Length: 128
Image (cartoon, rainbow, N blue to C red; front, side, top):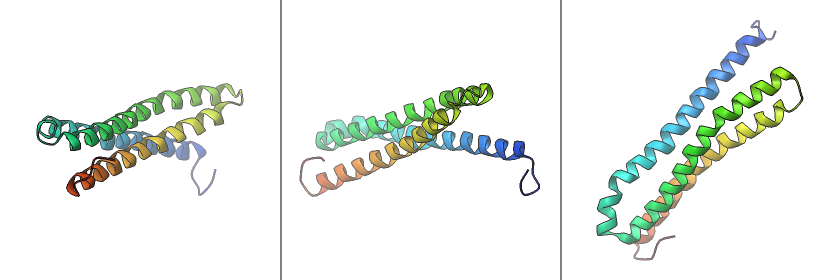
């Protein structure tokens, strides 16, 4: 017990925070991929050079969604291993935290790739 709260309260707070983080990762990666998909058809016919960058960016965002989706599975496995106290719980915890950071990184890389591709098209060069 620390700060006057039982350990279960902190566990519940961490669990809710991670659930919200995963929802956020789904929203930013999935929302960005869907937004690009909505414009892809028009860009494909008008600016194929920009469409190539959009497609690569969407691919990174979809990978980010897949990573976010696998976080809950690893959280379940980590919880099981913590409960059985077999010593591998921290490994699974580290794995799902890495997946969360990688999902966020995919969003950042996807946006940077898209902006770089748009910038290249505007400057008259080929995509990144």
